Image (cartoon, rainbow, N blue to C red; front, side, top):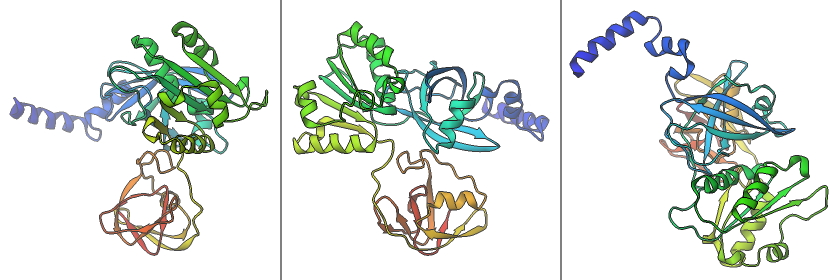
Length: 355
């Protein structure tokens, strides 16, 4: 059978010149083109600065677990940008649509664009869902979720998953929001809590003056916190406070964290150097504190990337020569063949990248 299909495939490619057969299919339906893609089915306005996008993926989709994230490829003014967004709709099988929630952040080119211009029918490039910030399999322990701001999105996916699958769970959810207008999924969370007997607590830190997380507050609101498997997601200040509290209690193994950005360290700029791009035969001078991703983009290249924060590993590039400085730790490293996160690494002398 294979011997018969090969000549047919070659004939199809010949007929399709200069386009491949999948390119013609793409003209009929963009979801039939090469690669993993998804069509926006609905745009749901969650707040003044946040939208949920219901996305219908093509047949290459492998599904997602609640709490995972998906990289979206968004074309803006002819340039494709990749960003990571948490699944907020719960578990999704291979045949299911899924939802991500995008909050516009100050200076966030893609998040702001999606909030203003995303429309039903728009097609996005996708990567498979990834991440380990998920519920355990089997019988669930007592759960504690601590979230703030858009850190609610992966946890909202878990809550919806619990409700949809009917898994028995003892849940306490402590959420911090500046005010009621910014309080994402407030009505949904209240409804789920009433239906399933969960304890959902919201602290409005601006309009009511409630303080952010503290050990005393946690003890008052959730006295049995030591007996729960805890999940935390939100701004770095919240992550640091919660992590320090669990560490001081010797309960690190009972805390799961989802970082939207790495804990950055102030790193003195090095000397920098010339960055050479092996495949494109281009070169550029780079300062010692400038991420290699930005250097490549300013040289006219479009390397694949995601979060631009060193978390998702979507920007890994092979180092061919030279050394780099990790801007999150200050470490200088590099041997030929090392994989470099170019969004958080800078040149430490002359560097050649496999780009």
